[in-house]
Image 1 (tube, rainbow, N blue to C red):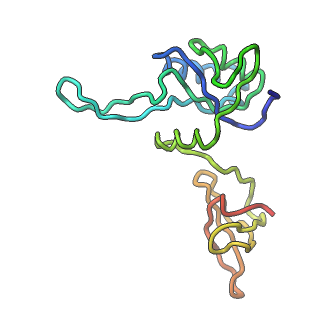
Image 2: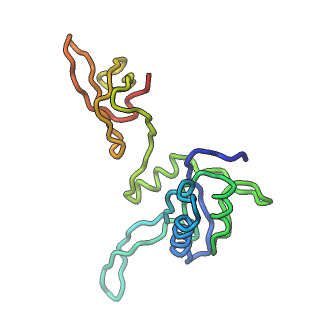
Image 3: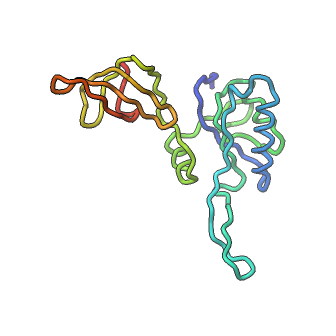
Amino acid sequence: MVESFEKEWYALQTYSGYEGKVKHDLESRTQSISGMENYIFRVVIPSEKKMIEKDGKMKEEEQYIFPGYVLVEMIMTDEAWFVVRNTPNVTGFVGSHGAGTKPAPLLPEEVNSILKSMGQFVRVYELEVEVGDMVEIIDGAFSNMSGKVTEVNQEEEKLKVEIEMFGREMAVELDFPQVDTI
């Protein structure tokens, strides 16, 4: 596999019971190795809260969905791959066939489903627009219209676009997936 320069999600296999330690160690290594924060972004242990009975009382406890696995969002370069696979208690990447081959990334819909079930933010659309750029609306009530971007909110993946309708300028709020750059 050639080096990828896109952020993608990968699954790491760890010793069972060491998921938290792997997450901590990988985040520490990312901060301590110069420039690695530009290649390793998020480390997530897929988990969910469940009500369990302990000593006759109901308690909420966090349980791992996939014991022995940790997800990492990264850009797969040789250096980042080396740092991750040589983190203590990591036994390998899922989707790697050994002998120095880099792993295949997880499918975006798989990761989105896991993150949403955990209540975590999922960035689905990367839209490179700035205030003043022209965009075409490709979905919704204003489909096939174009307008000028007046505001961009990257966190909520929304933008405001000024369009002309009935001979008047009108501002509409749209989601990133509803527009395309011109």
